[in-house]
Amino acid sequence: MGTLTAFGKYVILIFRVFSKPEKTKIYLKQTIREIENLGVNSIGIVIIISIFIGAVITLQTRYNLESSWIPLYLIGLTARDTILLEFSSTMVGLILAGKVGSNIASEIGHMRITEQIDALEMMGVNSASYLILPKIIAAMVFNPFLTIISMLVGIFGGWLAAIITGAVTSADYIYGIQYWFEPFYITYALVKTVVYAFIITSVSAYYGYFVKGGALEVGRASTKGVVYSCILILMFDVILTQLMLA
Image (tube, rainbow, N blue to C red; front, side, top):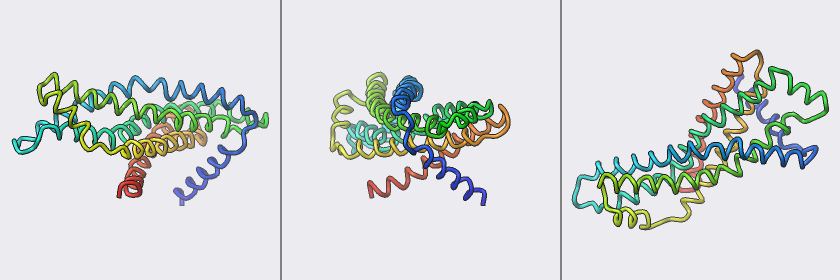
C-alpha cells in the first residue's frame, strides 16, 4: 500500500511539474543554470571514469583471449561495443545518479525543511514546476553530450592502455573499433541516456520535495533518491534493451 501511495504522489508531482510555466524567461534562465550545475560540472568525473574503464575493458579482454586462433582486433571491437551499449549509458547513468541525484534531493530537501518551498507556494508560484522542471530539462538535454564524451574518452582510454602495455597493436585496436560498426548502437545509448536523465532528476526531486523533519531526514531522502534511481535505471536498461535490440 505504501508503494502505491508513493507512486501516486510521484505521478501527481510530475503532472504539477509539467504544468504550464508562469514566466517562460525565468524557467529558461533556471534551465541554463541547471545545465551548468548538473551537466557541465559532471564532465570531469565522466572523463576520469571513462578513460580508466576503457582501459580496464581492453586489458581484461586481452588477458582472456589466450587462443592464437582468435584475431586480436576483436579486443578493439569488444571494447567499442561494451562502451557503446552499456558503459557510456547505463554505468555513467548510475554514476550520475550518485552525484547529480544526491545533489538534487539534498538541495530541494533543504528548501523544504527551511520552508522556502512553502514561501513560494504562498506567493502563488508552482514550486514543483519552478524547482524541478529546469532540472529535468537540463539533464535530458545535456546528459546525451556526457554520453558521447564518455564513448570517445572510453575508446581512447582503451587504445592508450593497449599501446602502453603492449596488449595489442595500435593498428589491430583501431581496426577492431572500425570493424562491423553499427550506428544504431549510438542511437540506442542516447535514448537510454535521456530516459535515465528523467529518472535521476524526477525520482531524486520527489524524495527531496516530500521530505519531512530536519537535516537527518534530508540525508535519508538523498540516499533513497540515489538507491531508487539506480534500481529504476537497471530495470529500464532491461526493458529498453528488449524493446530496441531484441
